[in-house]
Image (cartoon, rainbow, N blue to C red; front, side, top):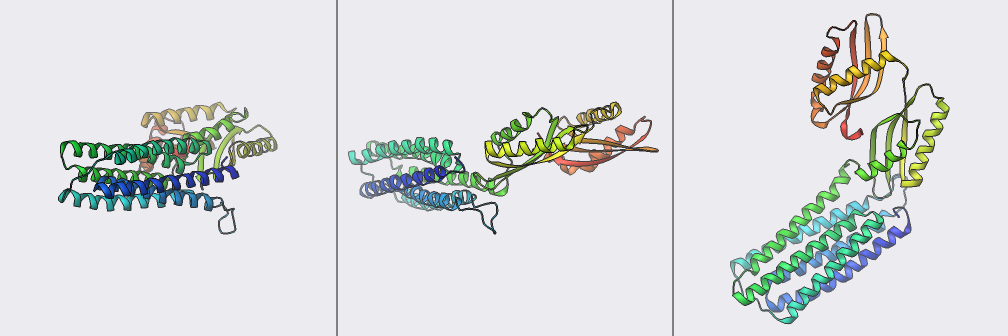
Amino acid sequence: MENSNERLNAGKRAGLVGILANALLFLAKLTVGSLSGSVSITADAMNNLSDAGSSVVTLLGFRLAQRPADEDHPYGHARYEYLSGLAVAVMILFIGFELAKSSVGKIIAPTEVRLDLVTVGVLVGSMAVKLWLSLYNHRLGKKIGSDTLLATAADSRNDVIATGAVLLSTVIGHFSGLMIDGYMGLAVAVFIFYSGIGLAKDTISPLLGESAGPEIREQILDQIRSQPMVLGYHDLMVHDYGPGRRFASIHVEMDHREDPLLCHEIIDDLERECWDSHQIQLVIHYDPVVTDDPELDRIRDRVQSLLKAMDERLTLHDFRMVVSPGHTNLIFDIATPMELMKQKDALRRKLEQDLNADAPTTYHTVITFDPAPFNV
């Protein structure tokens, strides 16, 4: 679905449905809010206007994201979908700020809110439409793997809650005489603003280069684990250029005694299978490992136990040993939690000190500290 015209058509369909539904709700609520004098209903109407604008941006984002790769953008244009989500977030934040100002004015100078069956009918109908939109976008977003549509679904669900609060304040104000319309309008504005911040975080994160989600990682690792000649794997890195535009690299370990040409063929097959099954461009680095040296195994186990004593999260890979007269070089990588990266020199000194305590030879370590998020 991520690479097919069906994805584009689904995104366009969701955008058009959102534009039509939210435009109609905006007009209905704006009319009712103006006639009843309710700032909270007017605030809710402006929220629907922002949702209609969001649907326009979503529609445009899907269109631009499907543009093919070119010389200037060899990785494609799929990140337009993320940028459209960011634009939607900015629109929501702006409208939330403006509505907060209007609501504060209503708190300072409150006016009576009129209630009639038309007002109640419009608000209840709005809640029903928004609930349907939430279910529609959630189902479609899951089907095509679109975070933008899932965010739209969550926004529609939140709108059901917000409109319910507006209806409640209108009813309470009518029967009790309490002037809470401005306060409820301010609460809706704060709710809109909060939703905008959450959406901004969700769209900025992949643009900044967030770590791969567990589903993508498992898709790649399941493919790697399916090959019995693979003894281990590490340094999984996934680069997200938008839905359907993901590139990844990983190191796989194989017995050094295996035919290199056979290993190369197996790696090529794994890369092709990853693309065919998951549309992920995978590049695999081949690490031959020694499996028949008892002394190397002993020293590696010793190093691993010392690392565990320092911090349970420290693990090693790519372990090699070069024996020279008078000393031995130990060359390996350590998967290191991000908060320990600044302590690399101290970790190295501590490890060498413990290794050389009562050792028959002198050990020198050549360590590459890999960020733990890249290792599994």
